[in-house]
Length: 250
Ligand code: ZN
Image 1 (spheres, rainbow, N blue to C red):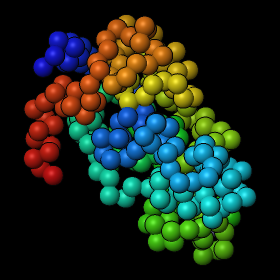
Image 2: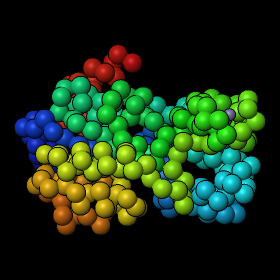
Image 3: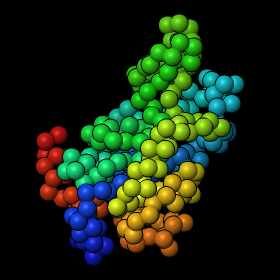
Image 4: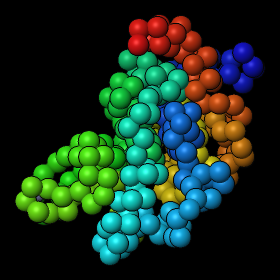
C-alpha cells in the first residue's frame, strides 16, 4: 500500500461523511470506454463527432442515426460493476459514504448496491415515451436496435441528458448540497474539464479533497491528496476486507 492510499484509508476511517464524485474513468474499468478520451469513440467510423450525434437536435432530426450510434457505442448491457462501484456501495453500507454523484449513465453504481446516487446526466437504464410518458427499461432499446417506439406510436427517448439539453435541476441541487455538507470529497475518473464537474467541486468547503485520477486534472493544485492510480484498485485497498467478502459472494 502506497503512503497516499494509506493516508486515504486514515481519512476515511475518521469520518462518516464522504461524498464521491465520479466521471467516465470510473466505468472504463468495467469495459465502458470514455467517449471523450483519445482512444475512446473519437477515432470511430462515424462521420459526425459524438457531441453532435448525442445532441437533442440530432435526436430530433436524425433519430435513426442517433439510435445506431447510441446502441453501438453507449449501451453496454454486459458491463458489471467493478471494484470501485462495489467499494463505494460498501462504504455507504458502513455509514461512511453519504452520496455518489456521477456523470455516467450506465447505472452501475445502483447495480452495485449504492442507494443515494445522483446521476447528473441521467441513466440509460430508463427510457421514456415522448408522447405518453410511459417508462421502459434498456431491453426495449436493445430489442429494437433502432428507433424504439411505444405501443401508443410515440418515439422512446433514453432518459439521458443530451447535448443542448438542461441538466435536471433537482438532481443538481441535491448534488451541490451533498458536496457542500461533505467532510471528505473524493473525485475520481474525471479530468474535471467537462461541465458541470468543475463548478460542482467549487461548492466543497472542507479540507480533504482527494483526487484519484491517472492523469493530471485542472484541480490538482486545490487537492489535499492526489492518487495517480486505478480507482478500483485504490478504493478496494481502502475498503479491503469488505470488498473481498463482497466479491466472494457474487
Ligand atoms: Zn407512449
